[in-house]
Image 1: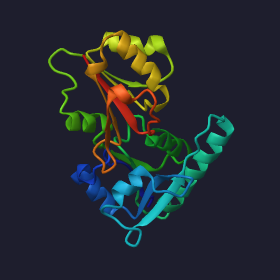
Image 2 (image 1 turned 60 degrees about the vertical axis):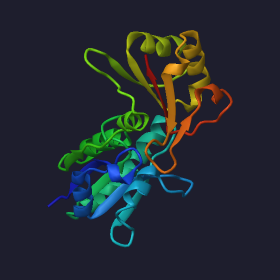
Image 3 (image 1 turned 180 degrees about the vertical axis):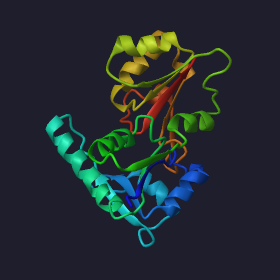
Image 4 (image 1 turned 90 degrees about the vertical axis):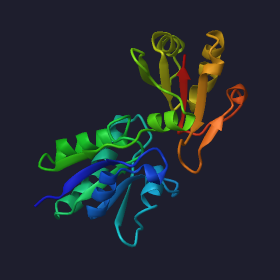
Length: 233
């Protein structure tokens, strides 16, 4: 019998936001696999999971996913990570692949699952949804994202003035993800549209490292990677 692969969302940072089903599947799993940082520090998802499960009671399998656009390197490394998990699945072990937030929303789990299905089509996959950083930010900021007929957009922030401005113009609320590299651009757009006071920026929302930033002081700040912006008109 081949083991089951669980794609599990462990939430935005606060371990208490792990769902009951996610906890049950993690408890049932023989192996917990997680995206591993190359510098040796603990990954975000790993920190959340280790609030409940220690390496002494679970086989913790760290998987390195390269940050590169080289297609050949990417293909090779993705194959390596999938093969590493397959070695456990083929022995009949259940493997939980954990990711922060939700596994099907801008997550490493998406491509990992596709690669697994292409290489080992017999593997049974179950997805356990998780609380996203978007929901976490709304709760922490006590900011309704959409009501009635209002529209909302989730936009990966990028260096494209027209696209970023149009997203704000076309929706009542926009959540810009991973804003660190383009914060000067977004700030200039907000100022032009007189929406500075309608925006909120937060890093590692709901975690013990959460930071809420003062919009007026962001121009010369180097923001961490897991930072998002909510613009609510």
